[in-house]
Image (cartoon, rainbow, N blue to C red; front, side, top):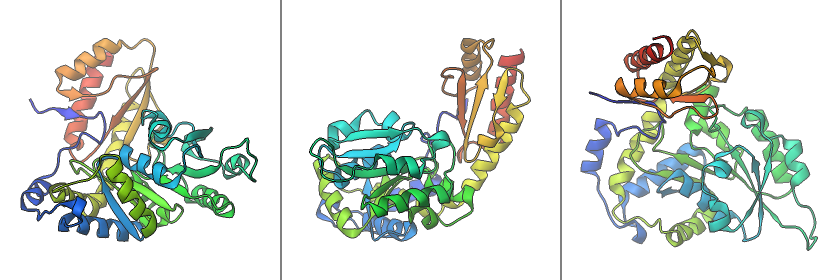
Length: 342
């Protein structure tokens, strides 16, 4: 049986072209700086993201934590949304690795209020206060929402007025650009540094990019080594990363359309509530009625060859990607129909 995996867009298998690129990749020792394929990826990523330089890192989590470590001094304070990925899903790494304090702000639909950010920036040299070392934004947000450019610009202007750098968790920034119908640089210009995942909806097997000013990336390269992220013959991973960056980033509208189709069909099922307005990228969140037998639901999905995460607090998520097309969505819908209707 061919499994359908809708748990996340991190589960994607590399495309046939990526597998061939891995086989053909010219490699060297990247710690010595002589892997030509890694260098090509980093140059391409910097240009695509509108930054001076870029660094290939093992994961998005690694990239975000490397950014915090490189931007901040130990004991600094980082301002960010209370529901962002760095707070919720990076295992408290900010405290362990960078030794910083996270100061969170309520962020409805992932949007940070510039006025609320301004209130929390530490001004002056009061010896009781930590130093505001960084502001973090996230776009697209891990809740599947896309942050308006105007909201990002407003925060960036506040940050610049106080001399505080901005880091963008852009794990799915190409999804955000696709939704906004803009160049990705229209988003990244509102941040000093950006992390982009190549291994989510872009389908590379491993790796993310951290991009920013050349001096920052030089410091981050040393910190990457400190964190155990020095690559050796990493060109075999950079080669599919190039395809992710240049080709797979161009087809995300298909995933978004499939997510919208799924959401509209889900909304017709009994016991399911879908906020269609929240379906902006490749994620569909929906609420199940209390009467739904979750154990039966998950068993039915498994029997149908579908891997899905169970609901949490009544909310369930399905994620589309290059291996989930209309035929796969119909199988998912049929299984859900069977579980919910019988």
